[in-house]
Amino acid sequence: QSVLTQPPSASGTPGQRVTISCSGSSSNIGSNYVYWYQQLPGTAPKLLIYRNNQRPSGVPDRFSGSKSGTSASLAISGLRSEDEADYYCAAWDDSLSGPGVFGGGTKLTVL
Amino acid sequence: EVQLVESGGGLAQPGESLRLSCAASGFSFSSYEMNWVRQAPGKGLEWVSYISRSGGTKYYADSVKGRFTISRDNAKNSLYLQMNSLRAEDTAVYYCARDGGIDYWGQGTLVTVSS
Image (cartoon, rainbow over all chains, first blue to last red; front, side, top):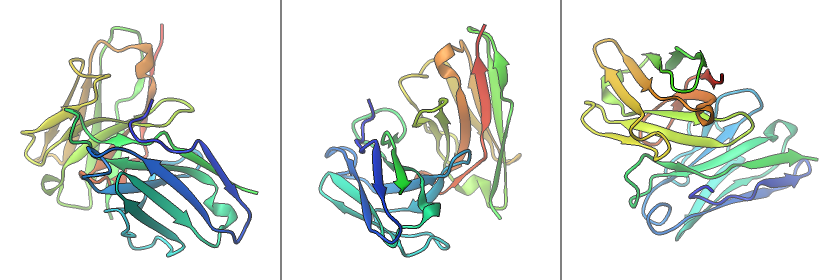
């Protein structure tokens, strides 16, 4: 079981807005930045959102991140077929003696 | 352009060892924390290990603690993962990843542990 909890799947039609949630605790999301990654089939993950809500250059503004308390969300507006991918949240956890932690991932299907 | 190129993956029998390497280029390697992240076939991402800029601080996931060792050579712009006492559950693609809040990933190297 992942330390961060994500829904296993999400879906939407082209043009729709979808959100993916990431639930944690006070020791991870509650006290550290959240990062979001997109993984297209057969490729390495790519950074989508850093420090809760910042977009790296080159990432479309259709992607946005937010955080409230011990939960975070990734929103994708104007959904496109090429957004079909796996999405992962990540954060450091102050209660662990290990490195950071990932959510279990959410497979987004564009219908 | 940031590039991270992993090597050293392959087939190993249970109990054997492998050493993964990651060659970094396009940035000041010594200025960044580094990580290894793995992904078992059809599964999600697991953060395996972290190393600080100087190499003085290291973290390991409980699943590999005592068996894997992360290290770096800043003079050679290289990151390493020594994997001992390999188990079937270590089978995965291993990614080299830059920074504490991971911003760049390599393409990964496949490690298969099977008899």
